[in-house]
Length: 402
Image 1 (cartoon, rainbow, N blue to C red):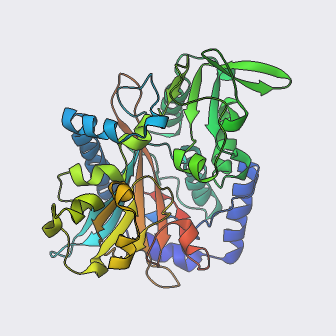
Image 2 (image 1 turned 120 degrees about the horizontal axis):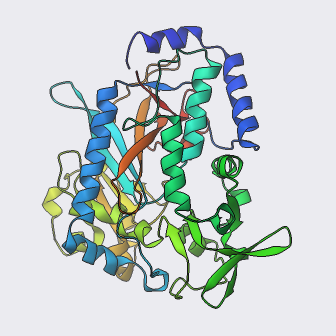
């Protein structure tokens, strides 16, 4: 895309530059980046990124501004994870789009999914900067969305994460953070702000307060930058030192309830040309909205509502796949129309598909703002970096524009 820059980059690429890129990323994040980073950034026309950001914001407001949807989404939150002190809107949003070619030949964004949960804001800033630096690209290239630049992006991020609290009273809370592939992202916040990364299983509860240990001291937690995913807590059977239903004297940047409120659960409620048709599995068995889905199972996906990083997704599910899901759990699964992504990134290894994630910050009492994007390049059925490990010119990338 965006010639002649695509061909110029491919022609000047060397394995040595790519090796240098990976080394610089490890150095700047103080750890090894364990997921696959693509050999190339993606060069996009700015108008396409602006269109995606606008659609993502419109879809988010369709949900947040609807009392009917908010009521249904609230009832879908598992009772044991229903936390009080909820923000009136999500502080973080991610909206993923694939690119499909319309009947008129024009590339059009198609929604993959959306999630009210923070993504790798810090790592994407560093990755885009290192693409430009390592490959000697023009300093005219930009990667921040919505009119942001590096300074304004970090100011807004700090406002959302820290609020009015002192740095030592704000923590990034995660499940076994040292074992997460997103650890490079955590280290960027540690180095830039002094933000403490804390294992959710190692905090201490005293009355209505939570505390974390640092240098032999127990420090009060007043605000949490939440990166802990309930699905992972369940899968790993993590014993928590507090109950989500406790009346805690803690603010949340990225309140855990929003992980459930805006997710794959949202897709059947959306009305927009960019949104694929979707039906809850229990509704499908009841005959509701069956006609909205393609007749061919080859064009359908089965998705668990609250999994992360593509876990549990089945392509072309069979009757056996559907019947294997217990009746009482079918409301936790979705049947979704599958879009055919267009291979649009020209590489020495052939054309590669791109899935673009627009990432938003939403300060309390202010407007939702797109700030940066993430690109997943792939050639398989799924676009996640885990599903494209044994190939080249695929993996995590960044969107650059002029």
